[in-house]
Image (cartoon, rainbow, N blue to C red):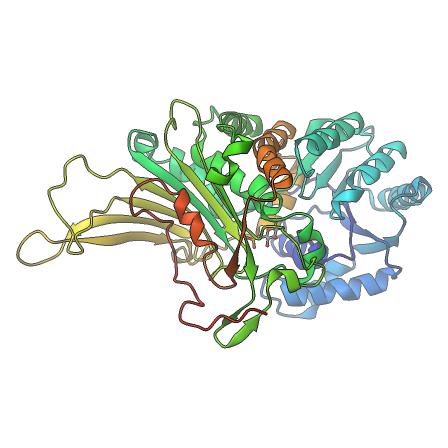
Length: 508
Ligand code: BG6
């Protein structure tokens, strides 16, 4: 594997959760694999007034708590944290960027970095513009000496208009190839494997279209609630937090045409075409195509779970959705008439992300299953956990007659025992260092995704009679989400049963 050029990584929002839980452990992991540049430093920027020494101690604990690497001794962590520095500054003050510039210059000259800087904006989204403008005004985005790249966390805007404005601001300061919009799902190994499954195997692609596929279902379920992020989440909701980015990117990779090459733009062009072909959902059709829900308090395995409205930072009369299910179509030759169903939610029974390809049944039914029901083949691409691929198909049960049983053929990533699956942030940080933008959302992709979701947001805002269904924490969301599925008796696939099924619910 290639080693990136020497560089300094500047993290805005260094005292935040993302830095401690994801970024620093991912960078440490890259170090243990010798994938960081030979000369490398991290400058953490935050409002909190702490010293570099205190920052190093904090990050040391973060690595111990959150690293996926087996940390065997403190030596390797200490060796890594000595490259960490901290600067407390007010990101709104242009003058403070001069201080930062001088500090970086001094470090750069003393250590022979060569002028390459990456700025990671891991701050609340309200600060993205001001930080980018100040970086540019202070000359920190100029690429005279080395490369300058900006990484922006999600959410990228809150609707089409705001995303377009943010893109405009960024384009005034830097070129598109300097901007890396993170969608950490694209960093997941199994999401990338979608491309390989589809385009490296001759047997799937001929079947991957409206002639053989009945419907496609994508679920991203979480069993956790909003945790400490109630304040952010209440102004966001599942549509902005998960659908606009992670779920739509998975739709893009599942539905795209084969790219002509692995060039970043060749792949992103195909994803964009899928987004452009999404059949717009009219505001008046939102109640028919979208179901939203909010978890209520319940008892799971004897433990009381707080309802969403009683979470810290959430308004007691909040109508923010913690669950969304959407039915839509992709208007193109490959997918015309095939319904796509996507859903995501917090406080569902389990943590699972999977893509289910439901094939059409055979044209003539020779065999009935014992249950009396006919079944059709399913290909289940399990993104997480227990990453793998499962093919469900029918086989004859041994013995008299032609009794048919649905069986599984499955592959688990864990079977590749000697292969370590890197974390999403590890992969994405490494790619930014190399300047590879394949796994980052492009300006037009983000805007087009928002354009598709805007009518839903508008309908919800305008029409309070559109229901927010309550669902007890630990269940699969509102029952109404099954009404979206076309076809008699069809439901979503439930990877495990409702946890609270046989428990007593208690409204908190
Ligand atoms: C983040 C969302 O982007 O993704 C969170 O903001 C969510 O609300 C998280 O919990 C889920 O990521 P993962 O990798 O745990 O599926």
